[in-house]
Image (cartoon, rainbow, N blue to C red; front, top):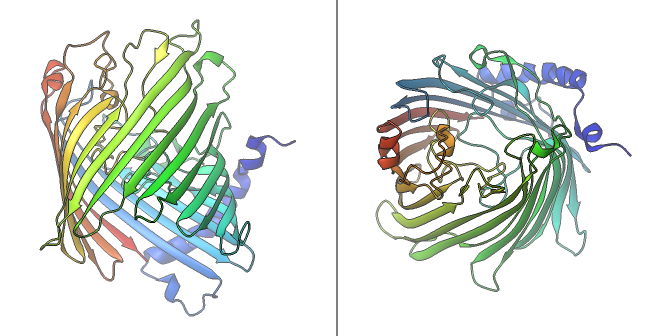
Amino acid sequence: MLSPRTIFQINHRLTLRIVSVISFPLAVFTSGLHAQQDPELPDWLNFEFEQQTRMQNLEGQFRAGLDGSDQTLEWRHLLKMEAEFKNFIFTGELADMRTYFSDSATPLDGTITNPLDILQLNLTVPLRDVFSEGDEGFFKIGRFTMDQGARRLVARNRYRNTINAFSGIHAMLEKGDMSVELFYSLPTVRRFSGDPLDNKPLLDNEPGNQIFWGGIYTARLAKIPDMFELYVYGLDENRDQPANQRLNILTAGARFFRRPQLSRWHYEIDNLIQFGDAPALDVLSPLRKHQARFTHLELGYSFDATWRPQLSFIYDYASGDKNPMDGDNNSFDSLYGVPRPEYGPTGTYRAFVRNNIDTPGLLLNLAPRENIDAFVKLQRYSLAAEAQGWKTTRYRHPGSLGEDYVGTQLETRLRLHVWDGKLTLEGGYTWLNAGTYMDLVGKGDSHYSYVQTILRL
């Protein structure tokens, strides 16, 4: 029987040939040609193009060992091709995600830079009337991206310059308000050659030392407009040496929610538990017991008034490691979810993630016109476990500093959609007002701003 690695990895030689084939339409699109309007394009073939450009600046570096300011230009091109036939759909998506104008000390990695590569390459078989009349869905095999539920554990990144991808099988079946989605995959490792500022491509791959699988069930609660989701995800590392450095965790949760509507209350309750094995503290110690949890609460109201204001109270708790030196690990792992929009921008900012946080906040959404939307969000960030420290800053200290209040974050965003939604203009500003924890580690306020355009053809 073939191993998952043999089944799902894409042969490098084949990938190079596909890149060369898809690169030609990319050049055509960037010259302004809208392929969907090309009269010579057959009905079964469709192209989509998206170009995102973001200039961002961070004043007041909060990460350990770094000072001053950072600025980057992030540039992302996506070209997607779909060939749809009677019994199957072939999908290929080329991604080119680069970074420019960064300082040599700017922390860059695969979350920001991933030059020219294959994001998706899969075969989809549509499903219909499988178990009952009217149900429909799909079965997919190959490399693909996913968005599931509230996008807290599995997501196709939108703000972040690079995008999560997986190779394996993915299936979904739905009927009315009920759906079931399952997958079994090898996460794709995003790579580049040499210094990330050189933007030299290196083919992404699926090394086979991680298996990511899961499923989500969604349905309506009786006859009311409320929905619920039940889900389970497994992340298994099959690392042989050293065997005590692997991560094997199971995440299970339930989510109840009502979507916002004018003149109505909306809410969301999302509760997750996580358990399994975490890497040992050193090569001579056994695996640690992993037990962690996450809770998201939201309650809000949508006013039927000018600018359609929507005000929400939000609260998030993600556990941290109470004692990093013992045999247990309580640090929550958000798997392949996204921190934005819940915790602020990613990119060169990315101050907070779904780990070791205790944060209440207020969110105000506004829509002055049909093609304009904005929000203002205020959140107070504290550490759920003082001893672990602030994850994204790389601070590590033996024991508690005696203070858990990190700071208060004010985030704003304004977005304008023009040209029938094909062009989006966006800008935002985030201010992190330093709390006592930041004072103790010698850091002050941080200011992050960005402007970006997104062109879709």
